[in-house]
Length: 328
Image (cartoon, rainbow, N blue to C red):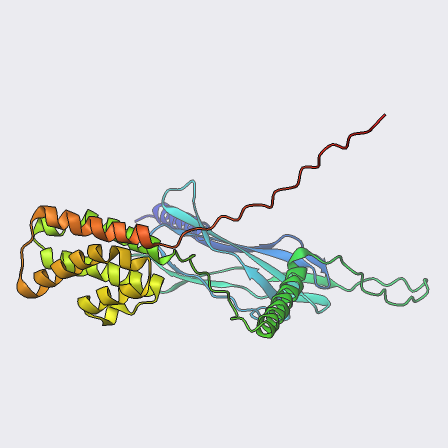
């Protein structure tokens, strides 16, 4: 091989090495290299690597660049490049410093591997310098007192706990007053709402109407029919006329009617119902349909004819004054 060929191969190798080195690079930059004490600046990281490379991105802590502090580290973005075989990785990191002077941001190292090679490769940024300036003080002006804190108006979000507390205290105070007031009246804490009770005769009539609608004897339930029918009559006598009919036998009930001038007039109707009911319940009597209707009719008639009579009070009539004759 001649010297010209060797030189040509060397040139090509250097070119390839230079191109590969430029393609695989890591760059760090700052928005500005000079800030005031406590101001924030963006540190930009830009790494370009082969698309198939597996990169190990460094994890930054708050004090990794001390005395430069990390305020916030953004997410790593991946961007396609004009060269299809390479990817660009970018990250923005917000930094600040509270120490004046020139601060150094050391080189940042990125480790990666390419497919088919177990060698751990490294891409590293250059170090950066950040000038942190102190707050300029005008010594020609007089020293003044520190301004008092400015008062900000209260917001609804700050006031609602106060309003809620006042409302709760008001409810508790109101409940205590209500409790003491009901106790003074000797009444229960919460009033018991009762439905207005109907008079006994009206309850009895409604019970008979319900019994008739059940059609018990039509379904062969004759004993149950007469049991409910006599119970209605017994309850009516007990609640309306104070006769303890629920504890008495049929004969005693009829005999007790003689003590009332009105009730004794209708004891034949009651006796027909009670006697037939006893025959059904104890002698297994099977009355005719007409007897069923007669028993219900007699019970209803007895209740309606012996219920209390409503007394309507008439207003006193006003005396009509006669006109007075005036003699001429």
